[in-house]
Image (cartoon, rainbow, N blue to C red; front, side):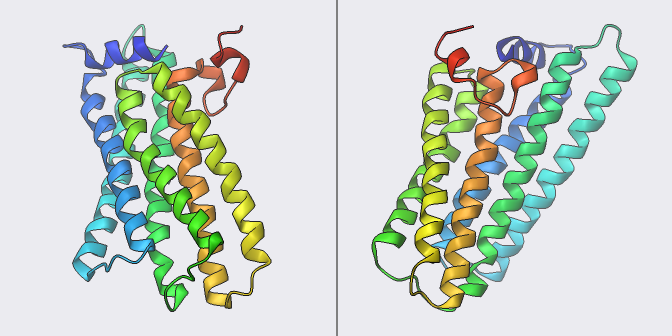
Length: 227
């Protein structure tokens, strides 16, 4: 279905053409915010101007979400026949992109809690690996979606699901650690925010893999070629 959606969105003189650039702009912003926020969480100094710029990107994502919604509602209300399935798909996906912006912003705010550098041990090393996986997903997911690359979307989805399980496991490790309270809170929330970032990226990828009624889910039998 996504292939048909993209052909409609990118066709000239279509009422839905206006949302194409805005949607792809949201995809790009979600990637940028995730990568920037991850660097801040792991110690990159963020100047007041850089923090303001990140928050401004979040505001822009929210504005684009509302603009796309308005365009879709207008299309559904005024055009006959309307491309209902495709509009419903976009309505779902833009919400995931908006949530990615929120969690990226939240990730940067954790530096105010930590009160010092992270310990250098196996638990933190594992979280660093989770970071690498989440950043890789952020870089590749927009390309998989925009190019309707089903094979890449499957690979990224499997990687993302594994990352989510690792996030759950590391929280248990942190809970049984001897870290100070600020470090426990920071690492726990960091793992949780990475999981939510990954989860919303997987929801976007489900738009490549799943029929409309199964968007946000992963049907292993269907993806592997079954019915």
